[in-house]
Image 1 (cartoon, rainbow, N blue to C red):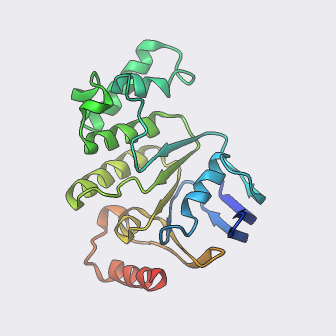
Image 2: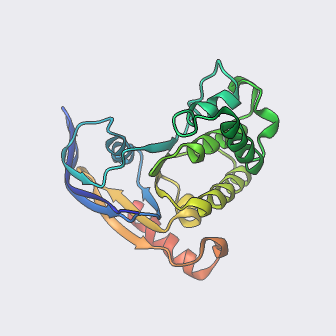
Length: 235
């Protein structure tokens, strides 16, 4: 998969410059985690990758198709969970039976088979996040964008969802860009971690996490070293 390359990327509001001649590379086929304080410009990068914002400079290998996991579920509340999932597959899989099989297979993996016929308003927050995850992986995208998808969840639920995400990601290995303020997410999920700071924002720290994801322990000496380095740059 191609690397995503930001070249002299600039973006500003009338009263604030968010990025000025920003340059970085998100390696293809990896989970790239962008850390930073609220308001630093993390979501601005995601909006640029989706084509939702105008900017100066260029993004090489900008994806034509992206899937998205939001902090809030963004599900259509008036149709069932199953129909929400079916919607993202209609263009890619014209055959209705094949779409249904794909949906039910994904639902079984994410333990949401029992909520497929329910409305999004009838399921829990944790179930809604799993539905979002199912939708993102079912969508035939080149790149997956995650905007603080685990914010506000308790540690136990967050850990379970991260494990499920990594299990599914391991099957297709598409490029991921995850923005978060939570070092925990970065340490458990990231292949490459970038820390944003300043105004205009720039990368003040980046590192490649070499410990296998399945072997990462937050108390391990190597992981603790990464954590301390990252925290020192965010503070």
